[in-house]
Image 1 (tube, rainbow, N blue to C red):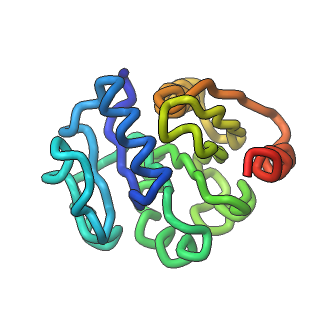
Image 2: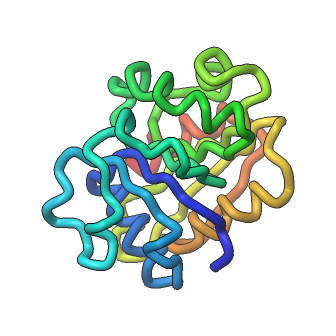
Length: 173
């Protein structure tokens, strides 16, 4: 799986399910950095790749993709800490319900490269059906990388209308 460097911000149930899927698909721990305040139960191969929070991400770590797996109510506090990655052109893959592409444009800049997705609970056993929508600034390589990361937890469905994510969330919830 060629996804480049990945920054995983938040590693609760869904973040962990995605992380485990990536490791099973061959993502190398050296290509990961995880910002998680409670890392005790993370898989052994990645325990050395953890920082306590997004403020402690080393300045020289340059992710290609930033997976936002924090609670929606925490997003306002986290995004300013990740602005430099947006400015460098990293793709942001968000699993936060209710945080729209317009929201990310307001917080990361109008040209921020964002994919929103709603994975569902079966992702924890690699049988999910994540539904995703790509923002206008996502390039084909970034979209393919996000697709590969999502396929590690199930079959991906891409939609063109962001409004469909709300319906998917309601049905799969």
